[in-house]
Image (cartoon, rainbow, N blue to C red; front, side, top):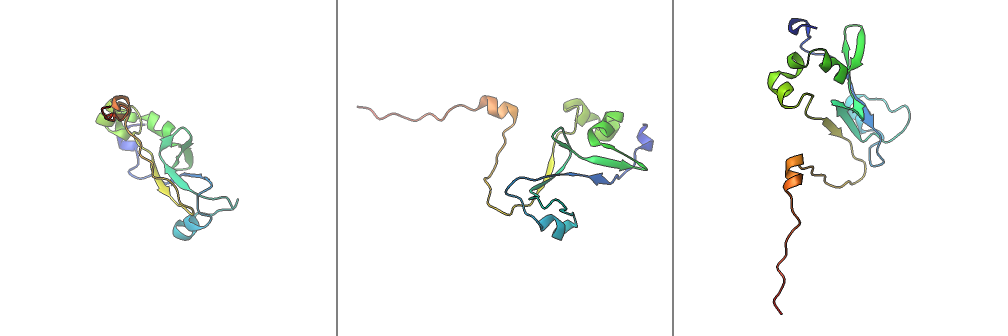
Length: 125
């Protein structure tokens, strides 16, 4: 696929994660996404994650976003992103919580490697 033949926009079909805390009807109400199985719909994943890769519609064919990127990674991701990461470096999520959930903070690999246990001062005897 050449750079000039890559469409500017492609319809995407995204994975919905059905975690227990998800809403049963919010995604349908907001976006018209059906819930035929009646499962909680907690997150829409938009990206090329191996545990839930979006699909793109290119004309009459549909393919995994990860496979589409592989057809011309530099043109699709951009030269800097391709050089720095070699893949789509993020996963965009839309959360739909019915129940309370914890706040999640994910450090980068280098931040996690640099983290040290909290040091406390011991009182003198």
